[in-house]
Amino acid sequence: MLQDIEIKFPMLFKTATYLQNKMGFFKDSIPRLFDEDFNYELGERICKTGFEMSGEEWNQYYKHVDGLANMSLEFLKLQVKLEKTGKYLYSSFKEVEENEYSKNGLEMEGPDYLWGLYFSEAFWKIHHNFVKLFLRDFITITKEKGAVLEIPCGTGFFLCEFLKKHPKWNATGVDLADTAISFSHILFKANEIPQNSYRLLKTNFFEFGEAEKFDRILCGEFLEHLEDPLDALKKFYRLLKNDGRVFITVAVWAAHIDHIFLYNNAEEVRNHIREARFSIEKELVQTVFEKDKSEPEKSKIPVSYAAILSKN
Figure 1 (cartoon, rainbow, N blue to C red):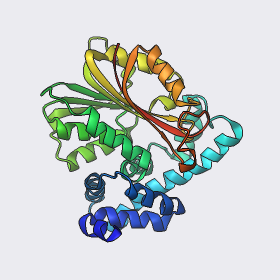
Figure 2: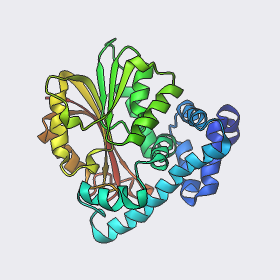
Figure 3: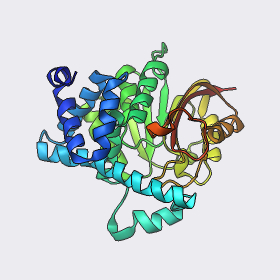
Figure 4: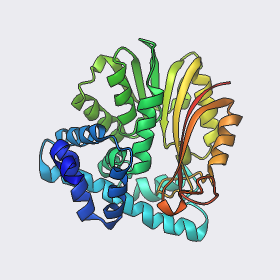
């Protein structure tokens, strides 16, 4: 099995081996990842593109891969605190900004954080499964042209994948971080996405007027970063065309330094979705840890939720 991977998908194999040697977390998780319905072609492409974005320098590439190891370690440490206290470290964006984003000139939205997110699409099982859901069930569109919005663009990964499949669509990505805008530009260039097919804006999506409508909206792990996620969902509803669709992922009871809104279980996410007047067409609920696998609807365990939504 491993020999076949090394021959057919050498970049994926090298990166996986590096992560397994770097951190014990990956010694167990990567074999389980490869034993299941893993998309090897996608994983190889993510690694090859990351290598290109690293200037094809191995030291720089592995430094970027370290972003995933660092992010994973931070999650495990913060999750222990969440289990003890029953709350996230901060409960407002102002607290996060003052204590994290501005502290010692460091920004959690900086390059290491974004590289961690980028490689998680291949090496975190829950994220990889979300990507497969996205590619299989969300971007299979017969409509030749349309408008797609990603909030926030983050690494730009999902918006990039959308444009690779639908190059005639007009894409908009919004984010409040300069580093996210910059990373997305680099990713799009590496994937040869024409510059005239997208715009990346440093802006608050709440500033979009009601006249601006989109056929598709992408939102990856954003609601938990907000003080009022329901308000954001209601704004998505107003920005979406009547026959539009939304792809959304949400972290539930899963700690990170800038998570603010604490969902206790997947049903609380569904309640917000319904209150915002969306229908759930398809969903995927995954536990972060194998020990919880049989109880994804249980409260106060780390879960990742994904859904495809439409208007009622």
